[in-house]
Image (cartoon, rainbow, N blue to C red):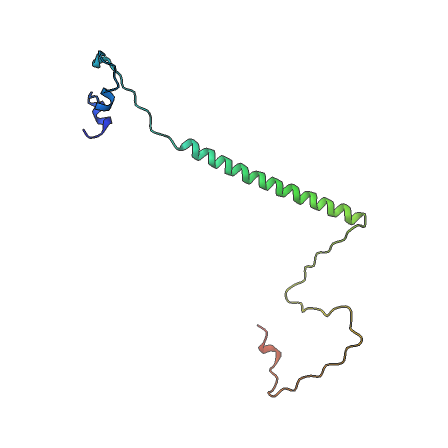
Length: 125
């Protein structure tokens, strides 16, 4: 009987509990009540509920901000205050030249190549 629980089940009173019993008490009528071990279920569930609630609040805030921004852009573009475009150019399309030309630019000379030019098909995959 090493553990206090084993001693209590066998009917023995450990020395530290025996000192707490008032003198003159009948030890056969003494009832010792043990405290239940701590349960971690409550704090774990509470933490999960708090995290889930925080994520839900952030998602709602993000959705509301998106709706408000979309409505603001729609109102401003309808009144002529702002305009926006979405550029969905494909990856295969080459970059276009800028719309404005420089008028006073001297023409460039092509560099002299010392080796033959490779065909364009060797550079594309």
